[in-house]
Image 1 (cartoon, rainbow, N blue to C red):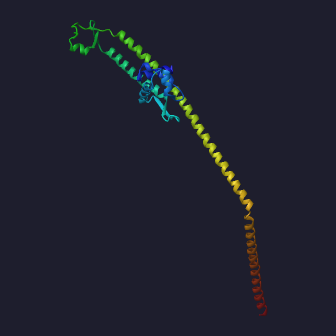
Image 2 (image 1 turned 60 degrees about the vertical axis):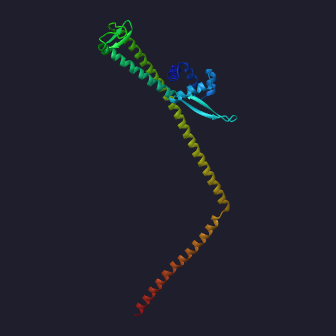
Image 3 (image 1 turned 90 degrees about the vertical axis):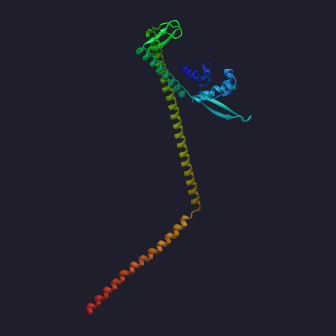
Length: 263
C-alpha cells in the first residue's frame, strides 16, 4: 500500500512514466544518482531532472560525497516518506472537495443537455440562450442527475477510504520517526554519562597521583613539628604567667593581715 502511494506521488509531480523511481528512493539510506539512472535505464540528466522536480516540492532529500580519485561530487538521494504522504493527502483532500462541490451542485441545481452536440450547461446559461444550442439550434433537454450523482458519490467514498489509509500510513511513519528519535536521545544520554564517568575517573587518578607525590616529599611533618614546638613554648609561658599571678595576690593579703595584727 505504501509503495503504491509513493508511486502516485511521483506520478502527480513528474508523470506516470517515472513512478518506478519511488521504489528505488524508498530506502533507509541515500541512493547514488548514477545507480538510479542505471536501474531506470535513462540518462543521468533525465534522472536529475526527475529528482530536482521532486526536490522542488520537498519530497526528496540529498547528500553529496566527493570522489577522492576523480575529484567531483556525487549526489545521493532518498524519498522523504512522511512529506510525500502529507503531500498526497493534501492532493486527495482537494480532489474530494471538488467532488463534494459537484455533488452539491447536482443536488441543488438543474442541468440541460444538447443531445446532438452532447453539450451540457447549467440552468442559468440555458436561460440566457433561450434553451437552444448555439452550435446546432436544437432545444436543450433537462438532464437526469441521478446517474451522475451516483458516480460522484462513489468517487468521493473511494477518496475518503484512500485518505483514511494515508492517515494510517502517516501515523505509522510518525511512530517510526519517534522511535528513531528516542533511540538517538537515549544514545546521546549514554554518551554524556560515559563522558562524565570518564572525567570522574580522570580526576580521581589525578588526585591519587598528586597525593602520592606529596606523600613522597613529606614536607608536612616538618611543618607540624615546628608548629608543635611553638605551641609548647606558648603553653609554658602561659602556665608561668598563671602561676605568678596568684602568688602576688597571696603576698598582698599576707601584708594586709600583718598590718592589722600590729595595730
